[in-house]
Amino acid sequence: MKRIVVGISGASGMLYAARFLRAVPADYEVHLIVSSVAQKILQVELGWDVKKQPFAQFWETFSEEPYLGAAIVVHPAENHFAPVASGSFITKGMVIIPCSAKTLSGVASGYAANLMERTADVHLKERRPLILVLRETPYSLIHIENMKKATLAGATILPASPGFYHQPQSVNDLVDFVAARVMDHLNIEHQLSKRWGENDG
Ligand SMILES: Cc1cc2nc3c(=O)[nH]c(=O)nc-3n(C[C@H](O)[C@H](O)[C@H](O)COP(=O)(O)O)c2cc1C
Image 1 (cartoon, rainbow, N blue to C red):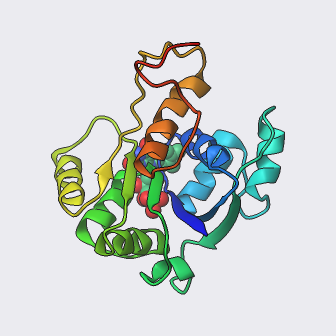
Image 2 (image 1 turned 45 degrees about the horizontal axis):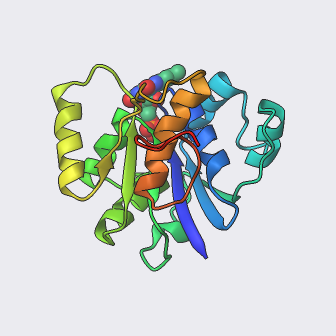
């Protein structure tokens, strides 16, 4: 089974999470952890109630694109007994998208206060990919030092900072640019965004 863990923490930019989740191929199993603040921001930014609606059902009302993606298992962020909390539960990697400065700080210090931080800690100790899609601006020195610490411990800081060289025509194009980079770092094949040097034919 190809499994990944997706954390959604309480930063702005929930569309990054939704477009990433929608693009994970159907032969993957996604273990999803949503912090309590993130649950509220998901409501505000997308109108998704994680507790009441499975992702596939939300997506069908949110977007005209069909949902053909992965099975998604949701774990409450307070549940330290979930399988993902253990290194013996094998995954291909983890992404926190979007990642708040607070969750970055928890990851950088190894302060596994909730299931998301614990699972990130497990990915670092097991030397598995851990991608942090940080969303904050501007950065304080504390943020920069935490990014350095997390990077030295093995995480990849992949800011929610899209490029423009693929000539985006919509917000979705911009968001998919970042989702595509996350897919690349988790070694997931995708067609989300054209690569530099690829011709149109
Ligand atoms: C609407 C809203 C937007 C926020 N956006 C951000 C953000 O973009 N980046 C960030 O670091 N914190 C942001 N915050 C603050 C975090 O939600 C707050 O620090 C929280 O403690 C994060 O907890 P969590 O990482 O456990 O979800 C936002 C808060 C709210 C209410």
